Length: 290
Image (cartoon, rainbow, N blue to C red; front, top):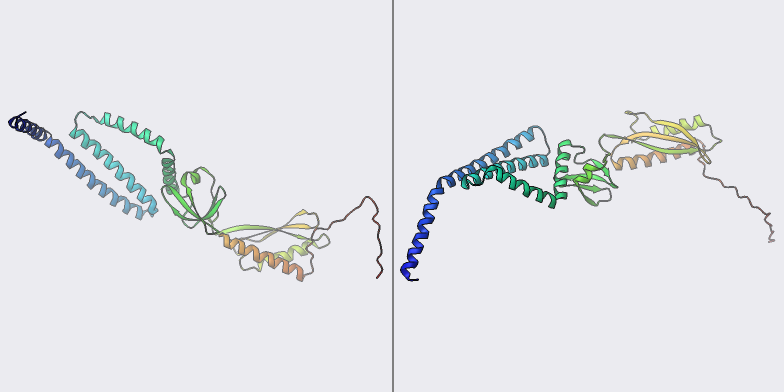
């Protein structure tokens, strides 16, 4: 091939390229306009959702999720329109079919991720618990520090951080210990069979009510004789205090100490188990002289 032939070939290719570009130039311009409009609508949707979420006092994580979903929706529609403008042979129906098949494949590949994602959206929408609540789920107990779209961060009472997948919190029962400001505590207190039951109940009641962590101003202290124990009459002592774990432990400690002290001061015996040993054969006793 001579140099003239090479130049002629290149000129022909360039002319074809320029001619083809000139033919699709209107479609490219229309697609570019669609992309710009999509960008603008996505920005407007982001600002509108953010303002609306702040007015409705939605969680910041939920606002971010709604903004992301709106942005993805706008860009998906805009990209679909732009592609059909540039490539007329690709109809919206064909594009949606291809997108659907791709979504199914991606869904199977990232099943757990999407499961946590959807569970996170539902948790943020329903708000079964809030930041700062003490919760328990599947032997995990602690304070909620952070709720994301994929997982929830729970700080246990021993200081360790547990990152829990959202689908676990959505599919299993969750106990929210601080859903209310008060929480009921019950302990068992036994007195000897020889003691006066009514007097013992009165002494226990006065002792419990004098503990400052007992909220008897809101809910009354309840003391009931529960059962005949092995060596005592057992009382069920119930009162209300703060709902945080430290409130519960502190109040239980103070109540037990106060009841023990009050019973000792009144001379009421708190028994411990006695055992009587019976031997089948007599036991010889030898006296040791000093």
